[in-house]
Length: 157
Image (tube, rainbow, N blue to C red; front, side, top):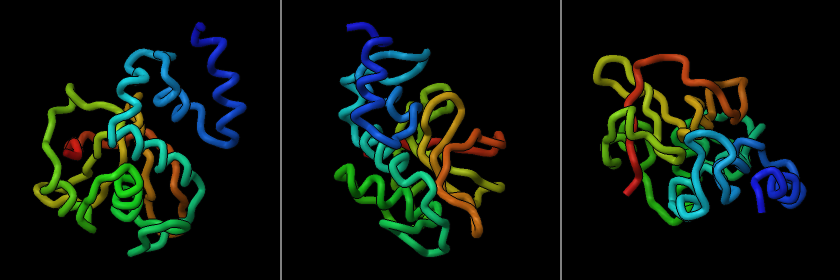
């Protein structure tokens, strides 16, 4: 079955899930750099799917879901659903991951935003230089382009 035939059936089964998540976990390569079916079974890919399913959930400082999230609360919740335990804050999560160079990043890796040596924000890499994250008060969980070069990447073990 070709990718073009699979996507509509995946879209129908997924309901409101995002097209990017379907591309990332759908089992076929639909765009350069998107994951294959084997990769979809990784904890990072499972967490990515969970985060995408929370699209539109309101930001709330200190919230860890399932209806409201702050940035590290979303990553904690998503990886917990994928069977992995993470600490509570973005900085603690950075210290718990295997650090990887940008050239080796993959969908499902964590993206840590930093100022100097201080980590202040985290999201889940979705491919295409975009992340799923809970940005700030007054905003919602969403897919957004990475807006700065001051990021580090970590893979949950």
